[in-house]
Length: 302
Image 1 (cartoon, rainbow, N blue to C red):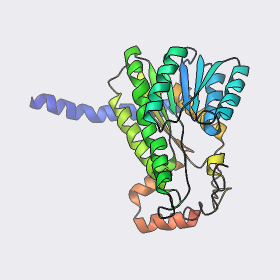
Image 2: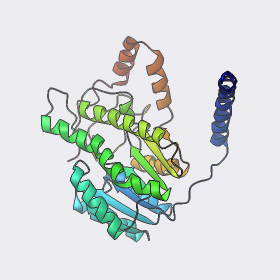
Image 3: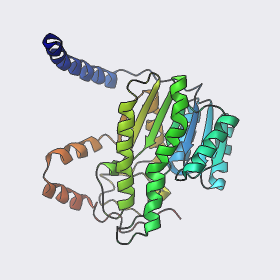
């Protein structure tokens, strides 16, 4: 028994070196991308913003079918028509992912009308942009239901069939605010931190499930209507991401089976700084970058 334990102990650092070298090689050599031609992709919040760009990108890269979920029929219909113009089969369903019964009902309708979902993209989210004391209780509950619990319901609805088929991918459009919160968006930051924990646990749980994987994307501030009015102190130094860039990098991460993606790459520095700097230094960084006041001009989606 002791020899087995010693063998595992000696092998472990060798495995770590191998995996690090392998990752470094993958950064240099062009990776083999997953073929999407047989995949049915469902995008929540797919009518506008990043969701619409995700639908376009999956269609452009050859996905077999695109299914859109959202709460605003006008936006969903416009996106569906655009995807169909690209030559890809597309359907939409009115669904509030924060409503558990509605998610399960519409998931059944999707399976009956379209077929099995093999790529689920949890993109739907809301933000109210207020401090805790200024927030309405119902608004706080709504953000947690949509941004966090909605992923529980959608994943529970589609993951079992993916496991049966041994073919599936769960994608979460999260936010760097899950790792570094700001004032003025306490509901959003809390929900995204919970969502990140959910995806981290899910990703580890899928390690022994052949053919089924997960990807979590954590982008910096993205220029969409949802965060309209948010102001960065140094926009030239830290420009907001374009939604089409986030969509493109997300689909690439799915095709490369990348578990976690921070956008842009400089966000890795933020994670490292949070791990080593004292709280007082982190507070000064937030003050210098304007994080404390960036939501003061927030308007949100109109």
